[in-house]
Image (cartoon, rainbow, N blue to C red; front, side, top):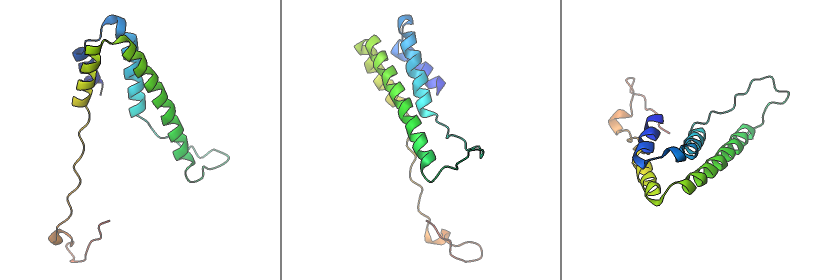
Length: 121
C-alpha cells in the first residue's frame, strides 16, 4: 500500500507545504484499512458475551473513520482543484480489484474418490 500511496503522492503533485496534511491523510487511511481485532487475553473477570467484541471493533472502526474524514477534509483545504481531480482519478486506478465469484462445481466434480457425494454450502 505504501508504494501505491507514494506513486499517488507523486502523480498528484503534493508540494512541501501540503506534506503535513498528506501524511495525516495517508496515515489515517492506513489506520482505517488495517484493523486488527482486539485480542482476548483470558484474564478478564468477565468473558465477553456474543457480539460484544464485534461492537468494540465497530466503535474503534467508527473512531478511525472519523479521524480519516477529518484528515481528508484538511487535505481538501490545501489541495487545488487539479490535485483533487488527480487524487480522485488515481485512487480509483489503484483500488484493489474485486474477486470473481468462485465457480460452481460441476456434477462430475461433486464426488470424491470413494464415490460419496460431497456437500457444498
